Amino acid sequence: MLERRALQVSIAIAALLPVGAGLWGIAHPVSPGAWDDNHHRYLSGLLLAIGLGYWSAMPEIEKKTARLRLLTALVVLGGVARLSGLLLGDVPTMPVAAALAMELLVAPLLCLWQARMTSRQHSPGIARLEPHLRHIAR
Image 1 (tube, rainbow, N blue to C red):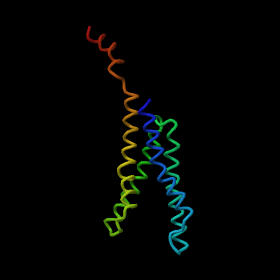
Image 2: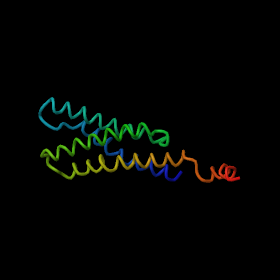
Image 3: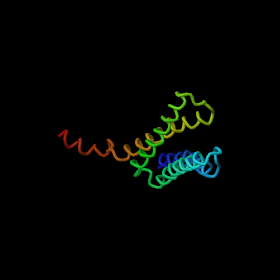
């Protein structure tokens, strides 16, 4: 129960970033070009949706494995695209480094944590197998 709550709190905190960045990006233009602003708002809406998707998984976190895996795959793919931008010459700034850490480290670790917690809850423990093992040993 404590691990479940810790995972929920961790996801709640981690999802603050895409929700906040998405809302900020929708409200603030990035350039004088209409297409750039429009595209930036669209991508910010996707970022907001990803954060809200993570939050929507929190109430029944142990049952939301598929949702968390899909969201994490989207985030990691975005992180790989961001990393490729650095390899192609984008400027490595602190916000870019922080985003990469969230996309390529934090999101996958939270997903793995949820998978580990769920597998432990669903796998039979030794205590539950003991009566069956005694029967076989006779």
